[in-house]
Length: 88
Image (cartoon, rainbow, N blue to C red; front, side, top):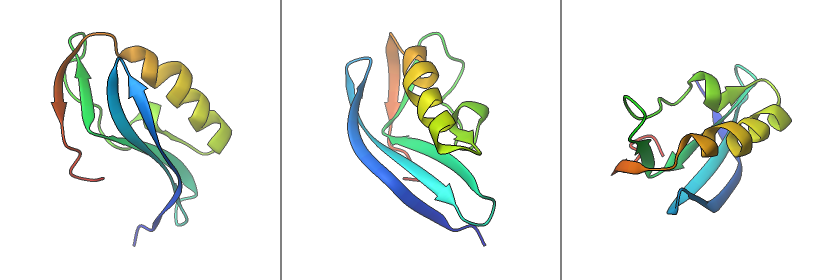
C-alpha cells in the first residue's frame, strides 16, 4: 500500500496564481514527489500535469526541489485553465 508522507507544504505563486505545494516521500518506493492545488494549465500545454510524471518525481529530494523551482514553475506564463486537485 502506498504511504505518502508530507515532508514540506507551503504557499507559492506560479505565473501570478497562488497555489499550495506539497512535497511527499513515498516510504514504500523511496521516491519523492510534489503536487499543487489548484492544478494549472498553461495555454502552451496540451493538458494538466499528471501526478507522478517525470517532472514531479525524483529519487532525491534536492533534485526534486530543483525540478520544481527551475523546470516546473517556468513552464507557466499564460494560465488558461485552473482546477482543484482531486488528489491533494
